[in-house]
Amino acid sequence: MYDKLMKCLSSVKEKTSFKPKAALILGSGLGDYADGIQVEQTVDYTEIEGFPVSTVKGHKGRFVFGYVADTPVVIMQGRVHYYEGYQMSDVVLPTRLMGLLGAEKLILTNAAGGINESFQPGDFMMITDHVATGVPSPLIGPNMDKLGPRFPDMSEVYSRRLQDVIRECAKKCQIALKEGTYVQFTGPAYETPAEVRLARTWGGDAVGMSTACEAVAARHMGLEVCGISCITNMAAGISKVQLDHKEVQETADRVAKSFKELVTEVVTNI
Image 1: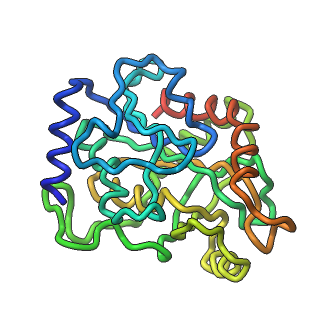
Image 2 (image 1 turned 90 degrees about the vertical axis):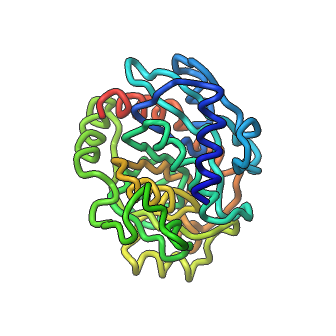
């Protein structure tokens, strides 16, 4: 896997010499965020030898290199999910690659189902912690010693310093910010009401199909991590209607402007 990662790194470096300081993974509703920055270069995933390609409809598949204000960033426009059939090591390969390209900080975004009954669709939740019991750890297998230790500490996956930055940015943008624990399951089926109750018992406030595994891989490498979920729907058993992806997309699109404003403020202040 390390050799595969190095091949991907070499492939990208053949196409760009851009050195990002921050990395951003775009979730639903933020897909076109990268189109509005000062773009220096783009690299399609299909141009990178051995790189996993997202099969989710509506997810672009490319890295965008450029500037958000004065901050050099690499943006993952379309992420890869475990439910697409990839090994977990492939799911987090893009995260590791962005770290090797120079990113020191990672901003994770996603669409999530609300478990906390005080939430409502359209809310933003800053991730303060996560539960990833429902998916395989990206660190299973031989340890990549050049990336990080065999048994990395996960006491502070989501940087407290960056949490303070996000709170201040939300105030400046006049955005009511929720906070909570994110629970990752495999998908692609939405969770059952019983699984949602289990997640709530675990202390979860929102549930989704990405993010936690990427955060673990990033912390293993020593990146400083933060995350924001857009609550696009209430989870099964809490919501009184059947869940579908159209509802998720509609809510994400409705609040996209505010989400982009918050993300821009965070990137320029971290």
